[in-house]
Image 1 (cartoon, rainbow, N blue to C red):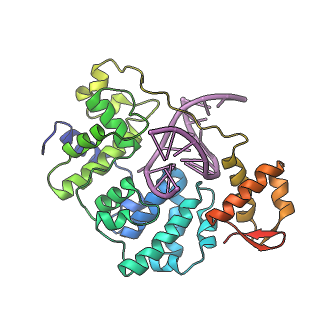
Image 2: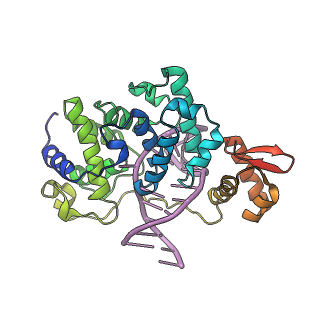
Image 3: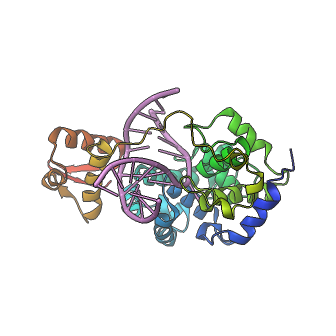
Length: 290
DNA sequence: AATCCGTGGAA
DNA sequence: TTTCCAAGGAT
């Protein structure tokens, strides 16, 4: 289906309201786009901006990053969260160098094969960096389509086949238009059709929105489990990683003990960090970034 | 398929 | 203060 009544209003809205983000500029490299996508996984734009800028300045190409240790990548990652993404980005740089001569691949399947690149990120890079026609399904797009087309407040916990069919059916025919459509719907979800308090008064398709037409009914799908935090392994790992990150060299176990009092959990989490490659043991009682 | 994996700002 | 959640991926 080439034409939908949603297309023109959303494309016009995007042309007028899009944010000026570094990875969207005309001179942004595919590498810049790929780095941004890894950083933006589960992480707000505002926190990504400064790290992305420093990252691209230090490592302007995949080859430059591939020449570094993984520890430097983890350190530069800073407090973005989910530091395994830094390892994956480094591994992706190595793979790009080895398999693609140092250039970010254009092919969706090649992108998907890179560490840290799943279905969403592969489609996003292929679309945003190379102007291809793909269904780019992130949480923003899913929410916009759930409301505007399906008429429900929020999408379910995982992408369904029906959602994917819907997204594909809405793709404009032309590659370049489809690529702009993808980023436009995403931007609408990020700026207007937000999760908690959507600004329907500013929405270009409010008069066509199935959810608004239905009276904006509350979410009634399966319960969305909220992640626990206090006392979890994730919190413990975060504390340990912060100690390693903030030290210029190896740290003694006493520093790690000071960061997390529970011995059993601390040792389990430290072992996990070693397995993940986020930390290394450099002496009988000292640890460091890899 | 369900769980795990960080962080910090905003409501 | 507590809760929610922000351009997901790997297992």
